Amino acid sequence: QVQLVQSGAEVKEPGASVKVSCKASGYTFIDFGISWVRQAPGQGLEWMGWISAYNGNTIYAQKFLDRVTITTDTSTSTAYMELRSLRSDDTAVYYCAKDSVATSSLFDPWGQGTLVTVSS
Amino acid sequence: EIVLTQSPATLSLSPGERATLSCRASQSVSNYLAWYQHKPGQAPRLLIYDTSNRATGIPARFSGSGSGTDFTLTISSLEPEDFAVYYCQQRSKWPLTFGGGTRVEIK
Image (spheres, rainbow over the protein chains, first blue to last red):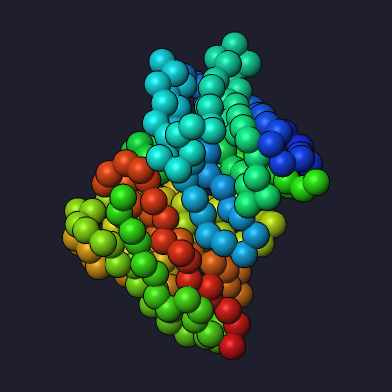
């Protein structure tokens, strides 16, 4: 079955960077895009960006444009999200999600989430 | 960006009751509106896409309706496993955006 398995929890100091991985299995990796979505404590879901696993094209939310980079490694069917210049309000659970087979720009399924804590 | 406003913020109901959740868009999203269910400690799950299409494996008690700027998710008879937070999401325009969520809690 389709599965996205993310890397483990991270604790970072303000100003540092974090890189979260998302390993896909159960489908042809290059056939679908992957998005990254985060949820801060007590908050809702926030879309960060999307990458085409086919050609590496990316679209980012304006809010993250200067701090986030989403990449893929097709040889290992893995997507990555790097967030730089971390602040305390970047503390959140970060999810990767595959484009749905039904149509693009829908998230199905999701990874299990990775907690990133930013604290000095 | 398109802002999605969900109401109510919290819905207190008993198992077996009908739940009606609303999502309003700041501009037309045509029919490109989806709903997700999110339980604590779990990944969100796609329920409904393009207003009224149930995702694979989603029970028939979940249904969606609406168009343009006003959308509704209906759960016809709440099961114990349906108590969760529900988010709407539009895919009409980049950036993709979510509503703030509606918590369906046990009364």
